[in-house]
Image (cartoon, rainbow, N blue to C red; front, side, top):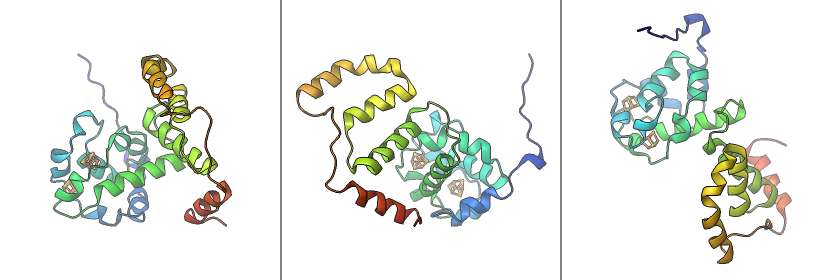
Amino acid sequence: MQIKRNIKYESELDKEFIKEVASMYGGEEVYNCIQCGTCSGTCPISLYMDYTPRRIMAMIRSGFKDEVLKSFTIWLCSSCYSCTVQCPMNIKITDIMYALKRMAIEENICPRKFPIPVLAREFTKMVRNYGRINEGRLTTKLFFKSNPFKIFNYSNLGMKLFKLGRIKLMPETIKNPKEIKTLLKGLEGKK
Ligand code: SF4
Ligand code: SF4
């Protein structure tokens, strides 16, 4: 049997990655990880992750930026905060996961067609444009941009919700959507 190994050379590692993470909200303590594995042991989703939370901390420290930002782990994290509560070094692992998600979106290196980043992007776009979420349009966009065939599995449910008036086709908007754009620009530090 042939053993396949992916080797990454020292020179290919991004030594600045840990500094980038440490400079983001919640990331300050990342240097203190003792690799005890408590976070992975307590994480209810770690079974489905490509890298466990402990491994993500080790990869940040070693400079595996590409692998971390392309991982499914950061998108599978359900923000339950169990790891953060249990970490003996008070590392804000959940906040770090959020920081990594932001970084992956900004650098446009999310896993392609994986539904969670698609949902995050469409959700934000809708808030920015209308100030409100339209569930019907959001789920339709989500399916079309991730897996269009899946829409057939949910068509009956969609029809039922539509008949009950729980989802609307036309987008609703707030009185002055420009205010939301100004607010978001302010949060992003833009003029
Ligand atoms: S629980 Fe905290 S110290 Fe232990 S591996 Fe996870 S992040 Fe590191
Ligand atoms: S916050 Fe995320 S990484 Fe931490 S235990 Fe919950 S799902 Fe796992």
